[in-house]
Length: 512
Image 1: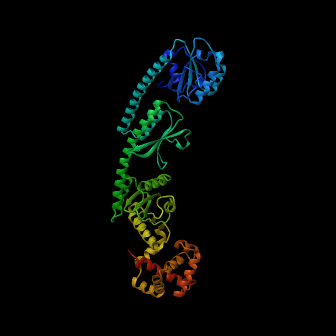
Image 2: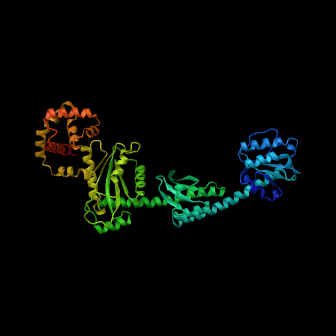
């Protein structure tokens, strides 16, 4: 038994086998021969390795030609690729049934002349295999040199992708793990429509960063080598792009630090540098701060953000600081004026971020977020301040709400800065002092119950949700509140006064 790597068709094209004839199963001549084995006793049927080509002498089946049918059946079951019969005479009439079976299985039966031996075929096949391997190595080195030169000459990943598609004679695409297209060949090809998609990972520093998708049903050994070379060269190209991207991110981070530390640079400088760093000054920018007990997963969070941004063809930015992620979220707009104070944006960033926070299968369960209003790039520090204020107020007033938008709590923020602490303190003591004392003595939560009841416009269901208790428990607590304070829950003026007192209490009594 000898190991080779050659198709039946290539084997038959060798000068040694010019007189050989395929008498049946011709559709299988493109199959690869991996072993050539001799069967001296056809009556002893055994399992053959996948890709085996079996050599037998005709005289062994002349007395019992039906044995060949059994051999064909066994070879097909074993995923062998064909059988060669050495004969000095025609034996077609003896193996008619085997020929029909061979055609059905596309497993060739090949007649070879008497003067050709098993060893002649084996040595010729090995020699041909070595020649092919040498040729393959030469072409492989040539292709690798070409691809490497393209990377070194900084021709670009699109040109590299086009060359790989040419080598493989098939459409290809490079896709990141958020399923965002990096590049495709031909340009504009929709890789999701691939008929025979095959994926190969592209690794950098032993970590998969993307994958190469090839739309091809089958390929030869040269193309297989080409795929491996393409993965390596594309990894080099992506690594260079990553270095460039990391540098740009660092520069954007420095730029953002300047924007968030008043006084901001002059507007014309912000516009110029923002354009250079991919932060479009014609966009509106919302800032969202996501905070948890531990830092969010940076790689996952970044991928999640850019996957969403790809839907709108925009370029956001994200910073990680301690246990926070700070998101800078652009929305395409017309020409921006110097005074922007809008509560609407065409991209629902608040809804998007809230969906991340509420996804129980995600990695942000238990995190909170505050989001500012859309601002011009040169006023981004205001959006950051609003997001932080929204997050601060969220921790005190928002119960189980995962995201708080500044536009929804702006009045609280204004009250927080203008309240007469002494005056509100005295009013709070008169109205709710007894209730506060009761909470402290009995370890109850009546103040918060009253706050959420007033905030929800007297909704028992919403109050119960915010406090994670049953609706009947809310009713009981409201009765206790009425007994302790004498508060008429149906008096609109009293509701307003009590709500202001509670806002004072939570914003000022527990201020940081």
